[in-house]
Length: 357
Image (spheres, rainbow, N blue to C red):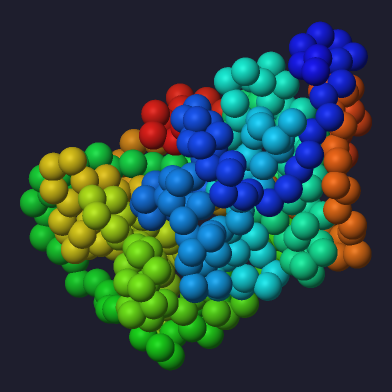
């Protein structure tokens, strides 16, 4: 088997992971690429946990699938995807790309083959959309580019590491309250009014996206617990903050009216005080490219920008058929790259965050 050199051909079988592949996967779990930040960090996801949840988890709305690329039954690379809990029949989130050290020089080719297989597998099951998040001009970004993923936005990951700065300002009169069951429609309308149309089309959210999961189901699945808070102005919701927390890590997600910018600072201050992070705890917040005011407010309250990542989507063909054998020969770098807008998957001006690899 020739793995190096131009023109070398590597016949690789791609299939669902079996029990015999576990030792090989364990050897590949270091040095891979996480694709669902910061949620994967907050939820405590690792490739091994992904295998456990995929093979023995009875809750199918949180199923994680693992596919391997193998030669002579030896795993060379793998990918993990998860059914999205709020829409498992229509959306998969890619979580991780791994590769064996011995095949590091061909990792882009292996990953492209795996991503193509995932597209076919999703299409066969009637899943129309696949999602991933990658940063910079990395080899992972190159693989997604070659596999036909499109960039529809970007996120900047901000981190508050440890105790929040001592903020002795008096709390302003802020109409902040917990999210209620009757807020779902209003939150969906707030998202529709503030997110760009390309993002709305790619994300294809329904109102279920804004419902809080029941606590019993979260505990049973071992995932982070979630809360929601809304800020009202008059009789309408102006700002929404969704919080996920597990162990010493938390994630914030904001949507807000542009006219409510002046309420962002007291809202962030109130949310951080409610979280009350202690030494060693980490609070993440990803801001979209259309949320510049939020990014500035987070920095004012002690958050630091750590990484910029592209948000990607791949549309599947439902009638696609999965090949049993993928032959890796001509480099993915030589393929014609389609389906990605010019200028996407570019490196941004922030250093990578150590915990995202």
